[in-house]
Image 1 (cartoon, rainbow, N blue to C red):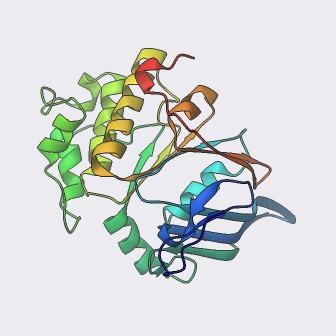
Image 2: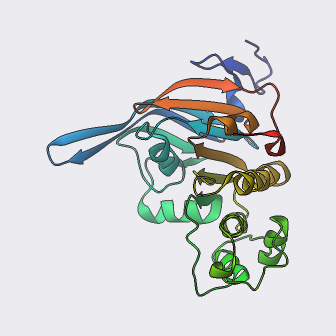
Amino acid sequence: MKEEADGGARDVSDSHGSAVASADAIFHVRGVAKVYSMGETKVHALRGVDLDLYPGEFVVLLGPSGSGKSTLLNILGGLDVPTSGEVLYLDHDLTAAGERELTRYRREHVGFVFQFYNLIPSLTALENTTLVTEIASNPLSAQECLKFVGLEKRLNFFPAQLSGGEQQRVAIARAVAKRPEVLLCDEPTGALDYPTGRLVLEVLEHVNRELRTITVVITHNVAIAAMADRVIRMSSGSIVDIQRNEKKVAPSEMTW
């Protein structure tokens, strides 16, 4: 454990033994629980989750279905609110925010990538990406974002004319076009074969490295954990383990 007496960043050990500089964290999650009511049944999706996330981090969330991964991701993205606990993003208290504040938070700070691409079929790749730039305060160029993900020759193609991997890359371009500080990805390779999934992971790694976007990826694929700065394992609504990779593996070197 290392501390600096001058009030700067200090390294501490979290409850799972990871050395982290808590003063530098962008997200602070403390004691977060989420309970859903299904008739008379209470479903505990999250149970007392504590977590910090840091600038430029690439984090992989692992765990079986029902472990709370998607619920945590939705709370980080302002799509849902916890039943109890605290979620702070910089100076934004997401647990106290109303719907209007959460909408603004999502619009200005967060990009989402899902397993299914959610592209508008009647719009081209460029038009799908441009939609986001029209509501963002400081967007990137839609054309440059598509070039960034290797689709500069597919600008005027409709989703039906693109492969699954190309559609997912359009979805990533759309997510980053608003210049988000946070990129949240829920099973982004789940519907893709191995070569295509690896290509999509290369794009996500490129976005994380070049734009310094906090990137959180949910996956069932344990092999993907090798490309992360930290790997967070969840079970039954709780974080059960956090590991830091001393050496990250490039997506091009991974097999599964």
